[in-house]
Structure formats: structure tokens, C-alpha cells
Length: 562
Image (cartoon, rainbow, N blue to C red):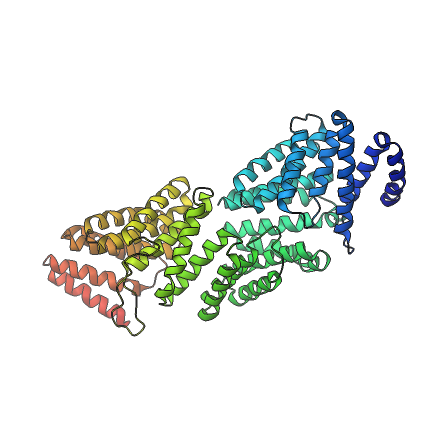
């Protein structure tokens, strides 16, 4: 008997004997609410069935609360599980009500409802930007699923959704390896399904594939991420026609992952094309579960355009990202403001940067205590840019001496901003080594501020700490070795000013050793300035012949003479 016919037969019976037939009708309505279809109006029909079941279960629970609390909880969960326009606050209230009915349950049927309710509540809290609370709920949902083992196929897919929520929380909290591991577990639940059941649970498979590809890319495994996207490409391209909101969102997210992976592999044109397609898909679409999705796509596309040399288009895209993120997603707003500020500084448009940094600092301070994993690193970056604007002369395109730096930006002078950035970065790096590069940048910036303020002694101490940090990072690639070389060169210059000439000589020699190491990956011309600095210090030590030889070597190297 079809479900529609069964519901039609049960309705009159439930009206005559609600306590006898009502639970069966409620069960049928809940089952109907979970029936997925690509036909027009499917979501509305599912919502209507869930709403009818909820009203019926409320009446049953009012008459027999001891017998029908689990049924009411199940109906509440079913209502929230419909992808319609139900306000998120209303959904959260209903899920908390459902959890209250089954929180102390021990029988399997109630535990299944409890696990599902916790997973849905965690998913909604993730959308609201509360990843810590969401993670706790999702982990408790996973524990409830474990208590229900062995699981049916339906329950395994709900467990997979729970794992995806856990992964999203780890990602929001800046833990890419943990996110990748738990998303791989979700994929391991989907892959063993038969072809028929994989088709039945396509939305779970695609969501898992996109999330896992994002984590693979974030952990430096671009090739694996692209292979996974290629595996699901046909479905990702087809799904927007069947389920437009979810399909477009997943397709856009997969394109952004592909764009970043292509860029990492040097495929610039393909990366630009993918990011542009993602922006087109998200433009004009309701934000759904990812409120900052459009802003993120615009920011990624803008960064790719800048890297490709199209600075006007890239800067314009970043400006669009700022506007798209404002009042929607403060995390994306902070990232977009900082990216746009860096672009303006690079282009010499320093006067346009101050309002961007003022807003960025305000946004990051607002959330730094509530979500430190996201906003404290952004705050360190913003403060570092404040140091740049207040400690370094603004460049002039014609080569004339630049304008003096601003006295204050965002209410901060260079030394104050630099000290706050270093203090935050030390805490971040102490808790997570991935933030050591951020600490290196903060120390390097504070050195400039302190030195300009007339304290070369403290500047030298800061650079020594910076050298220690950057030596640890030097094995990661040429960019890190270049930054180590710059730091050693600046340290040598500070020591020269302090008349600690023997120490300065050693710093300059260390700088040259980094540049000239067989595995440095740096061009020989990087040694020109360090050679001249070393020559200058040796001359102060009356080692004239050696100084003259090094100065000649620098000159020949600059002119390409071997």
C-alpha cells in the first residue's frame, strides 16, 4: 500500500479513535515528511506532512504524556529536518524542546531521536557562528549513534551528517587536520553503499565529497582534492537542476576548492575560470547554510586576479567581497577587509587603507574572545598592517622620498599595535605551531616600529627571537628561507648601529649562508644587499681588503658578471 493511500485511510480512523489510530497516522506522516523527491512542490508537501504530524503528536502527548513524549520529539525533529524557509530561531527552539523529551532516554528508539535532534541543533548553531557549542552537541550526537549500533543504512547516513557537522566545527575552529580526519570517516560510511543506495543518498555523498576535498586542499593535498572533485563532477554539475538551492551551493563550493587547488598547482587560467563560475552561481542566491559564501567566493576570485596580474579587477572584486560580507559574516568581512588593505598597500594607495584597517580591527576585537581561533589571527594581521602604515614611509611612484607614516591608525601608534600583535601571536603560536609564521611577521613588524622609535637594542632582541622562529620554518620552502635571510640581514644592520660589529658580521654571514645553501631555492641576486652590508661592517672593523673584495663581488653579481 502506498504511503499516500495509507495516510488517507488513517485520517478518518484517527479522528474517531485518536489514541488508538493517532500514533500510526503520526508515524506515517513522519515517514512521508522524510520522502525525498525531485518533483516540484516536494519540500512543501514534506513540510505539510511534518506539520500535521507535529500537531497530532502534541494532542497525543497532552492526553498521554508518559506514552507519547518520544513521538512528539520525533515529530519535532521531522519538522526541523525539512529544507524550507523555517526561521532558524524557531528550528532551534523545536530541537531543544525535542531533546528535553528524550535527553535521559535509554531505549534505542529514543536514542535515535536524541542523536538526530542533537545533530540538527549542532548544524543550526554552526550556521549561527557558534562552533564550540555546536561541536559539543555533535560529539554527543555521535556518542548517541554509537550507543544505537548496529545502525541501519538510514542511521549510518545520519551519522555521516553528524560527522560532517563535527568537521565543519573543526574547520571553523582552525583545525584542518581534525576536520579532514572526521570527513574521511563520513566518506568511509558512504562508499560501501550499493549503487542504488548511493543514488538514494546522493546529497550526503556530494556534501561529504565537497567537505573532504576542502579539507584535503587545506592540508596541502591539492591533487587528492581535485581527484575527489573529478569523481563527483557529473553529479555536482547535474544536482543544481534537481535541487537548485543545495545543488548550486555544493557546486559553487566545489568550484572554489578546485580554483584554489588549480592555483596551487600553477594552473592560473583554470583557477580563474572556476572561481568566476562559483561567483556566478552564488550571485543573487539566498545565503542558506553558508551566509558568507558569496563573499568568500568574491574574495578568492579577487586574490586569484591579483596574483594573475590583473590588479584593477582583483581589487574591485575584493571591494565587492567586503560589501557582500558586511552585516552577513564577520569572519569573511575581516578576511576581505585585510585582503583589500594589503592590495591597496601594494598599489601604493595608502590613504585608502586607514578606514579598512579601522573597521577590520573593530570587527576582529568584537569576536576575538568568543571565537579566538578565527578572529585573533585576523586581528594579528590587521595590527601588523597598522604597524606598516605607522612605521614605514609611504612610497611614491616617481621614486621621490615617501610621505611620513601616519601617527595613528585605528587609534593605535606603531609600537602599541606591534606589541599587541606580538603578544597575541605568541599565545597563538604557543597553542598551535601553525601560527609560527604569524608570530614571525609580528616580531618583524614590531622591530621596525621599535627601531623607528629610537630603541635599536630592543629591536635587535626582537629580531633574534624572529630568527629563532623563522629558522624553524625555513625547511618549508623558499619563501620562508627568504624571510629568514631578510631577518638575519636586518639583525646585522641593528647590531652594526649598536657598534656590536663582530655580532653584526656573524649575522650577515648567516644571511649569506641561508641564501647560498644548495637547497635554498633563492636566486643568487638575493645576496647583493647582504654582501654590501657585510662589506660596510667589515670596513668599520678596518678589514678593508676583505670589505673591498665583497663590495666588488656584490657589484659583479648585480650586473650579472660571474
